[in-house]
Every structure is written in structure tokens, then in C-alpha cells.
Length: 65
Image (cartoon, rainbow, N blue to C red; front, side, top):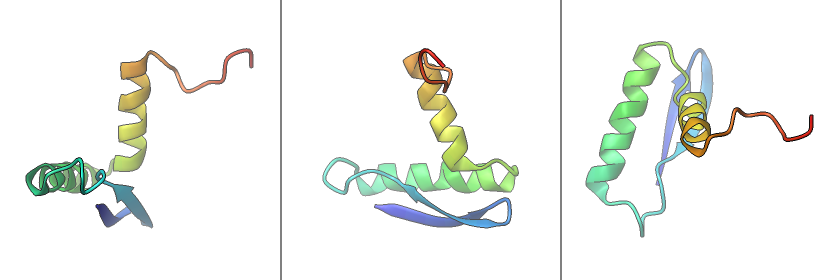
């Protein structure tokens, strides 16, 4: 499942998860969250990436660089 949106003036595509693993209700919640991020002038793709990095303990930089 995917979501097309325009974040900060540019078109973006955001995956919501495999239809086999994500229920319709969960996909709708994720889409609502993404739309709220766009309304707050936040790129939901970048925000989700940052949240995943923080939960994994990564700062986004490659080791040894």
C-alpha cells in the first residue's frame, strides 16, 4: 500500500506497508499521520526515517566516516 502526497512543495511517495502485513485500518492511521505531518510543514518520509534511526540507535552516519 502506498500514499502519494506533496510535502514542502514536492511530490512524495510513501509506503504504508505490504497489504499482507498491514490492515486497512492501520494503513489509514499511517496515512492520517502522514497528512498531519504535511499540514505541519514536516516531510513525513524524512520524519519516519529519523524515527526509525533513533529507535535503532543510529544517527544516520556511516560507521568509520
